[in-house]
Image (cartoon, rainbow over all chains, first blue to last red; front, side, top):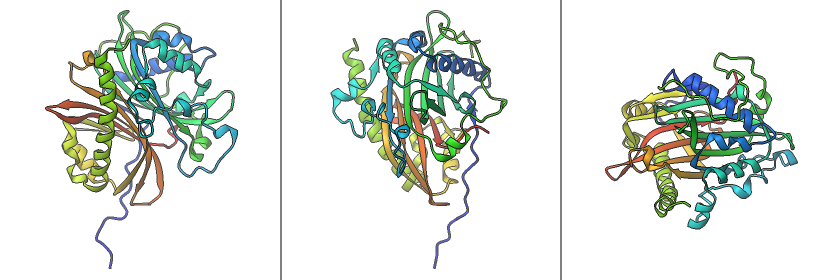
Length: 214
Length: 138
């Protein structure tokens, strides 16, 4: 005798992007294109302009469950020593220390992470808040490490606020890095040019251009 | 130098993230009909790119998903500067792990971010972003 429960409930289809305001699209597209152009370049130093004076950033990382691959390109050893996984880091002082605070610390930390190439066309971008005073954007996507050629999957959230110069800067940055699944690896860097794809924008060292007030 | 207040908020954010996620995933997996209380009336859930606004609609959406079991592997939390959020205590929480849905019983990797705010001494979800780890290029 079984139970009368729906067994064939499928999960809703995924969408590549959610925008709380349609007007967010151009701003976020341009902001991310500029940010990752610098992030993927030889020097991430000029990201200094992209962060708020008192910005905070933290990173967590973990291996995929039951991932039997054990090659140099799947090793996460360059991330693990800095992973602020508070399920494991339980003492107060370490929790404070692993949270990078102030844009000098944040950018120094980012500069030490492995060099990367992100698959910008393959980003899933969700804009959860879009007001004149605060923008919250979450990204999911994949990148390749330049040196190891390992491919990684990430989830990242930016809180973005207006800066004094009429532009915008990141005040909170939370990053999660893990390995790609087989499905992700097969599809990475294979996008055509979907409608929502970021337009290539020349990298600038300045903060992103101001968007019209939402 | 970070002030004493902001350091205390860092401690508080971590402790709250532990308690919040423990309750959230317990409700989602075992007592889903009670989960709407965890959202602001005007809360936002973005589930794999599908946006649902309002705690009633969020609850209906979640009730229609297959039964689930979430296992957390990483957790992280940061305070939002109080000057940005009208001095309301507000935390950003990121949780990652594995989820199994009862419709196919295969383990999927998920990543999730919550923005929570203290309202009348209760934590409420302002906005939430849930993504399964799958390819996104069409």
